[in-house]
Each structure stands twice: as structure tokens, then as C-alpha cells.
Amino acid sequence: MALRRPMVAGNWKMNGSALLAQELFKKFASKLNNDAVEVVLCPPTIYLESVRQQLELHKDALNGSIVRMGAQNLSQHDFGAYTGEISGGMLNDVGCKYVIIGHSERRRMYGETSDVVAEKFAAAQKHGLTPILCVGESGPAREARRTFEVLAEELDVVIEKNGTMAFDNAIIAYEPLWAVGTGKSATPEQAQEVHAFIRKRLSEVSPFIGENIRILYGGSVTPSNAADLFAQPDVDGGLIGGASLNSTEFLSLCAIATSA
Image (cartoon, rainbow, N blue to C red; front, side, top):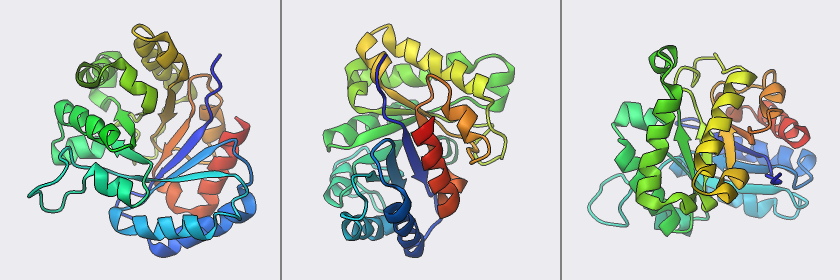
């Protein structure tokens, strides 16, 4: 069985501040003291520099803990007249290692199609970033028992454009739309069923990828439900929304992932 290091990634969305970055790193320096979990912070673009500064400032105090920086989105274009957009090269330039691709809010609110998501996935890897690819079904799709069909479609578009081996440098985050920001989380059994399906889907083309890719769960993860979710054999941590804005809760989730 592959040894997949757990990951806890905080997606601040359009929230947070430079002060939050300071609070998090003060707690990281005193309480996060091993490399058993990889922590990724994804603040709004305007706060990437604040997080980078805190990373540098607390580099020695982190005692080998793995804390990295990610972005919430990127353009599929390298450069040009795309006002307000950020390229993968720019994100790499400021120290990002990861970038969230295809979040349900981007798909739903900004009309990002699966084809656009596949292009952004490629752009991220072109510029040395590891994409955190979000996939997930809506409430009506789950009620209609179309969960696996929806997930297969979202994965297959990315695979068709980039190839299965592209997932050797990628993370997948399963985020059921009916759980994102609603306070209603998938049960551990539901999460495990979907994560196992994703792993099996990739294993059919590449057993190595299927076994080794990390698959995160996202959708109203809190310290009260994380232990049961993270204990599932195919759940490798979480993509955290609201709880990532509370330094105490976020550190608690990191500790839970370490011991899962």
C-alpha cells in the first residue's frame, strides 16, 4: 500500500487578512512540529505575499514541518490582455507550489466548463505548479444516483487533454456541491465510496497513479467530523473552507490529519 502523506489545504476564498497569516504561523511555529502532514495555505491573491513573508520569517521555527503556499485560481493563458487574471508563471514567481483548479464556485458562478478546467490544469503544470483538481456532484445529481457519472465526466475531460500520467503531479479534491458551505458534510461512508471510485477510475489506466495520488475531501469539514472522515482508507486529508479562517480550528484539523 502506498504511503500517502496527509494534506490539509486551507481555501480562504474571498476572506482573510495579513493578520490571519501572522496568527497561523505563530501557532504553526509552536504546535506544528513534524512532517507527518503537509499544510497548504490558499489565500486571496492579494495576500500571497503576506503568506510568503510569514513562511520566510518562521522558516527555522517550523522545525521541518511542511507548509506551502497555493493559489485559488489561475488563467489558462500565459500572458496577454486579460485584465484581472493571474498566470501560472506569476504564481510560481511569488512562491506558490499549488493552485486550486475547477472549484465548484468557479464552475457554477463563473461558468468554467470542464474544458476550461482541463486547460487550467495543463497551465498549472506547465509553470511548475501542482493542481488541486476539484470534482463533485450537485444535490439533484446525487439524488438521481448520478454521482459516479458526474465525477467520471469531470475526470475524463482532464485525462483526455492531459493524459492519466499528468496525475502523477496532481491532487484531487472531492467536494460535493451539496456540502460546500452548507454545514452539511458527507458521511465518512459516502466520502470513502466516492474516493474509492476516483482511485479505481485512475487505477484502470495507471495502477501506480491510482495507488499514489492523494485525494482530499472538502465540504463542511470541522474538528468534530474530521477524525472519522480522515480515517477512511482512501481519504488523504481535506480541502478546508470556513474552518481554515480560524487558526485554532485549522491547527486542530492538522493534528487530526497527522494521527489519522
